Image 1 (cartoon, rainbow, N blue to C red):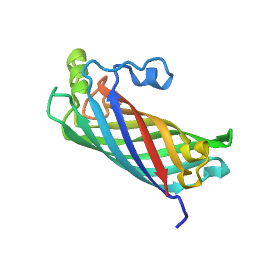
Image 2: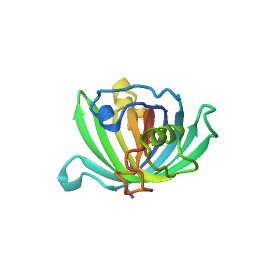
Image 3: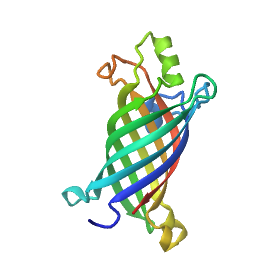
Length: 187
């Protein structure tokens, strides 16, 4: 087993009123009026390193998230299973990574922001939905020049659940987005 094949992440964020495409194109970071939050942990294992001799790593991941619904409804847990591709960029004596993930999500309840959107758009609701995430991070240890903290990444995460045009739970336009910050350690 190679060194640094595992990762562990802690994240925290708030619900967004922006659509997924607005977030990943940096055209909207509006907080949702419901002011709900999510806190989560994620663990993964690298299954491919430097795919096709390019700086692409592939991980399989699982996460457990706590949804703080801010008294709109009861709080609940959500689990995600997904595959994630990291593109590693080395410059300025640091490593920057862009990550994109695809998988499935099962929530103990339908998040309040998804419920509001379903009602507004006359759409279905489902606990089981498609899961996507996009991340942007950098090696914190290399930035502050502390060897023991290398491969500790500080980053921004877009957490996304949706029905993927009706393929999951009959949800066509509904879903949710969360803007999160995180720390992730490779070991």
